[in-house]
Image (cartoon, rainbow, N blue to C red):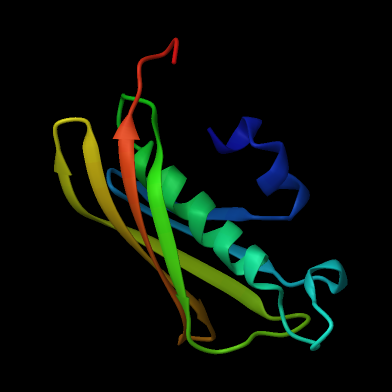
Length: 124
C-alpha cells in the first residue's frame, strides 16, 4: 500500500516495521512543514499518524479505510525533528477495527491519535 501512496512518499515517510495490526514509521520535519509559529503544522503530525494507522489496519488480507480519526497534540515539534509514529491494533471485530497511534520525538510523546477502520470490498 505504501508503495503507491504518493502523498506519503512526497513527505518522506519511511516504514520502519510492519506486522499484523502494527506499524511504525518516521518522518523528518522539513522547512515546508513549519507554520508561522515556527513549529510543525498539526496537519503534518496528523498525516504521519494517519499513514501509520492506515498501514496497521491494512496489514491483513482485506483493504481498510478510516471511518473516524482524532488526535491530541501534547507538545510542539520543530524543523529537523524526526517524528516516529507507532500504531497498535486495540480491537478487530467484523469489518471494524480500533487503532491507537503514538507520535514521539526522541521517545517523548508529542501526540496521541485514535482511528477506527472499516474493511471495504476491492470495488468500493
